[in-house]
Amino acid sequence: MKVVVTGGCGHIGTYLVPMLIHAGYEVISITRGNSKPYEYDPAWEKAETVQMDRTKEPDFAGKIAAMEPDIVVDLINFDLKDTIAMADALKNTRCSHYLFCSSCWAHGRAQVLPFDPDDLKKEPLDEYGKQKFASETYLKDLYRREGFPATVIMPGQISGPGWTIMNPWANKTVLPFQKIADGEQIFLPNFGMETLHHVHGYDVAQCFFQAITHRSQALGEAFDAVSGGSITLYGYARMMYEFFGKEPKIGFLPWKEWCDYVGDPKECEDTYYHITRSGFYTLEKEKRLLDYQPRYTNVDTIKIAVQSYVDRGLIKIREE
Image 1 (tube, rainbow, N blue to C red):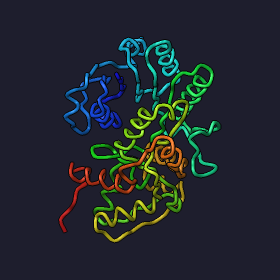
Image 2: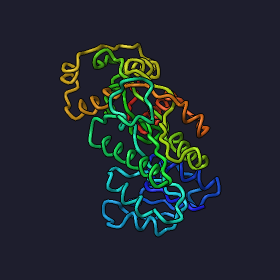
Image 3: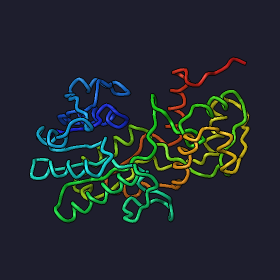
């Protein structure tokens, strides 16, 4: 069977393309430029790579359909109009499964925990999440009305070696890691009880793969591609002090004072959108329907990613 993967060299495709090839699928990887996968696998030698930029190719969906795929994994779709165009192009073709990559950002603020992947009343906080949720709703409705073979996968905060990881401040600056590695005190917003949901890119890819191989159970459904664990900002910070062999020095500040302490409006905004979506995800549905079994815990993933920072010199270990 032929699988087309958009964003094939990205966070998820790095692992998904080799998984598919090892399982005997013919794979076409769509990439915008000359980017390479984050981790090399010999299976990539068997993948066909096509350079095509969705934002610059007016008939992107039509060209995907012209490749005559049996399966399309759409990892770089951020707009409802692109989802509609892709679904229209794939109708009445040999495509028997369209997998759409949504995001945990589509959930918005938590009301009842754990999050429900089938919640039709989500209230995303930003345009990114709103567009993802709009595509989810459209695809589920299209499946009900016309039987369009769609599945929605919602990754958590994708992490792993070589990537930018969400830090104990719930943003992407390396500064809190460096402060902790230096044995300095850091301050957390509020009481540090908000949660993050790191998941290894391998496990997100595995969730897509399991949905492909469990097609009949996956059609018309939405799944959270997460590790099954969450970590509080406080727990994350303590773990990092232990990771670097330092005595924990953790303080707390009210939100406005904490933003003044950080001193960067963009970083504060990033933190805001992550901590306002605090919550917890269960894997009950994913295990039951897809036999999804994450390889990495969220703690494993954090430690792997932070060690990668150290190995690449992004966090400096100073001699005492």
